[in-house]
Image (cartoon, rainbow, N blue to C red; front, side):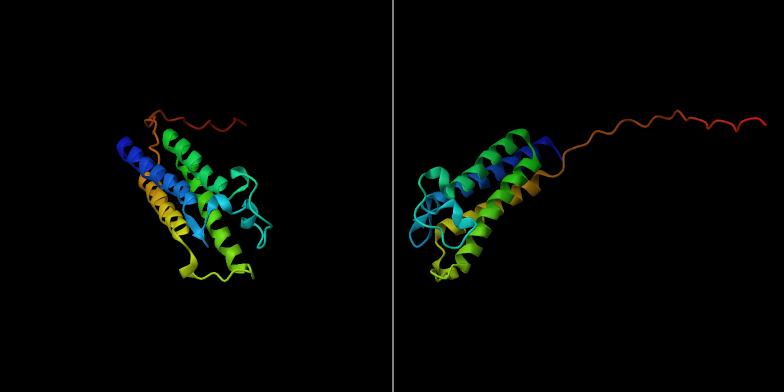
Length: 156
């Protein structure tokens, strides 16, 4: 895998990470974007009230994907990019599961708005970029032809 292919894959993954963060500012459900959904919503079905700040909203988890995406793209690290992808996927899946389990909401596929769909599509783009990076080239040391003979058995 050439460096050009690794860089291209990293750029595609970073664009996907930007898409995940951009989805935080689109409506997810009921006209609410991720900045209006409390972070606790990912772990319990009925959080009380609105988030007190951006740092307590679901957008924080989505923004961390771009931070990890930028770091992974600069380092050409599939591990860091994969970690960002997992954070984004966990955020999306936990939101879907907790929204489906909430008795006060009647959520169907038609109720999910653009933000969640953009997040899912951006995660797919990010995954394609990570896979497109391929494995890192490993250097092999030249084979050493010197052979070490075993020691003879001890004399009786």
